Amino acid sequence: MTEDKEVLVTRQVPHSALRYNDWFFRLTLVLLVSVFVSTYGGTGMQDAFSDPEFYGELAATFVFTTLLAEWINFVTCRLDRVYDWERKGGVRLVLQVSLGIVIPAVAEVFLAVMWFRMIGTDIRETNFIQYAFPLIVMLIAIFNMYYFTHYVYLQWKKKEEKRPGTVTDASSAGEIPVYFGGNIQYLPATDILYAYRQGKYNYVKTSRQGESYVISLPLDELEKRLDSLLFFRLNRQIIAHRTCCRGYIPAGYGKLQVDLSPPLPVEQPVLVSQKRAGAFREWIDLKTPPA
Image (cartoon, rainbow, N blue to C red; front, side, top):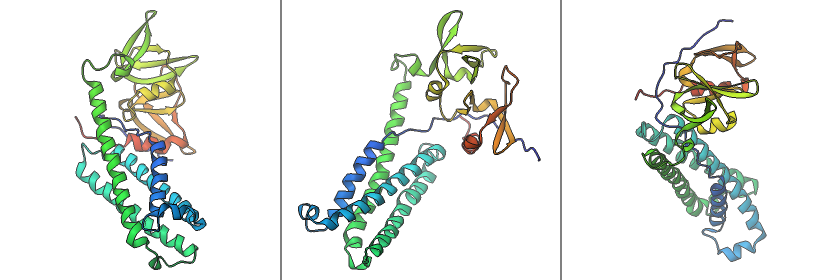
């Protein structure tokens, strides 16, 4: 087997991937939209709810709308990682319209045709194109606009939190509590090269002359506090900064062996599991311009 080692060029990443955490909002919106679309252009909501056939149409609309909402959420989150609005606005706009509006609209027509065919109806004999489809396209556009607005808000919030004098808690200011000389001190996250577990304790290797410190945080909690574009959870024992991942080679069975520099204090290969190998390649190959 030829070992093809890839060397990573160090770059500074402008910001981390955003997390919208809006599943409840999406579910509520999907339900409201499904009811509205199913009754729009008909004889009225009261008459619709008294018609048994209405509930079959409502269920189908709910499933279709859920698929579209989840697709838009998936596309938006993926594009945020690679084509964020601040650095690549033009490309992002084209991709967002193509993947977030055009494709869902076409998919909605296809799903509607399949649904009406299942119930023995020609879509051309219904009011779907006249009433429902323009409304659905408008709602798809609104959903995309919601994510853009949410993105702008979250970015503004992050910048506000980083302003001097706006942060009162050291840990929320991007600092990690460590043990030093029997006392707790706060270490800037930017000084961390990697975190690792050895025995019963967790440590962080720092850029301060290569010193290591004991931390009380579980690695799961530490991972949440670190920038997800700068740090990656290689395995259960190691979280590494991208500047420390000098390259990687196949390790068999879909695993990857990472060349970590500086090396771990213990002599053991740094492995990424088959399950996380794809995400690691995507993360390590993320192209960002120098600051």
